[in-house]
Image 1 (cartoon, rainbow, N blue to C red):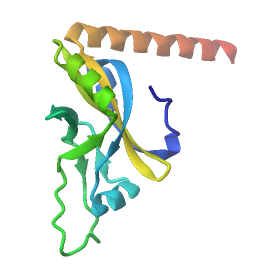
Image 2 (cartoon, rainbow, N blue to C red):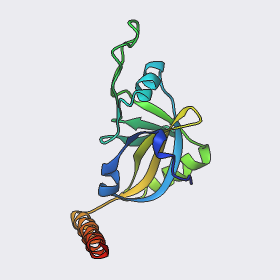
Image 3 (tube, one colour):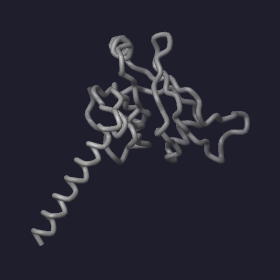
Length: 157
């Protein structure tokens, strides 16, 4: 497991993932990128909200992650915004994930893209889908906490 990356090095977050899934295990995977994609990520031109991770032939692939090309992209390269990107993870971790994803209800979800030592990393999570009533309960709890914080704040003034 990994510790949380520095917020300043974050490129893109998938805020929808925590709302739609119960996140159980987190992993940090490297990404295979083209040059224009790395430049676009430095400019913050990435979107992860529709992204998901697929296992094919014992390898992990990130699908649905949009990286918009910069206007200054090379003329001999035809950038594709929704290109499938390969994720790099240790073989033991991939085997463990394959076993768990084959179980009913588990999926792999990208949580964020961030820089680590000059390299782009993707934090992925093994997740179970939430039912509609679970989402409602989470919203109620969050609103309840906000009301308590407001009451304490106004009381301390």
